Picture 1 (cartoon, helix red, strand yellow):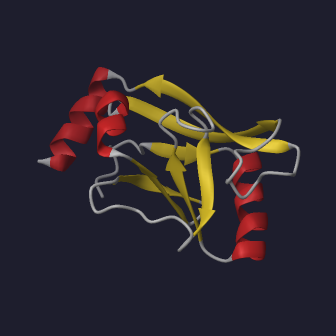
Picture 2 (cartoon, rainbow, N blue to C red; picture 1 turned 120 degrees about the vertical axis):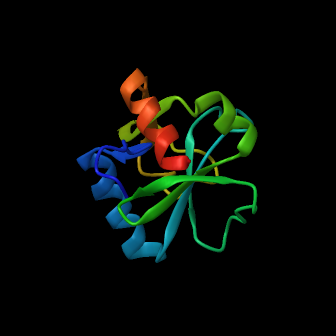
Picture 3 (tube, rainbow, N blue to C red; picture 1 turned 90 degrees about the vertical axis):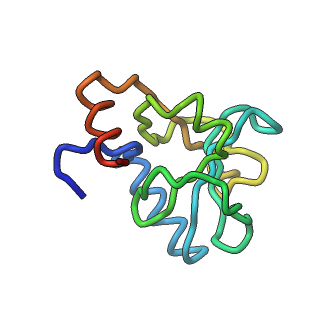
Length: 125
């Protein structure tokens, strides 16, 4: 990977700590960014094997060793956006592994700069 290519997804220390806890309890995990059904637009956390990633899903990267995916149609809307996975007080998604802990995963986002977009496009070419 070229060093000037920005990451599409990163995680705060709080998110990394919760990921490590969940990995200790469930083994390998993954994230799929919800598109608005059921649990709104929350990032959903699953044990690997409990959620089937489609061949079309886009892998944005990894956070704490867990793959982070979204559907291709949602990616079209978010492809110019950097995501930061965080943890905030609240209830996790009904099927998400953090549910019942009084915290939930949360996405913070920002638009990539023009330079970052160019670097991403050059890396994809």
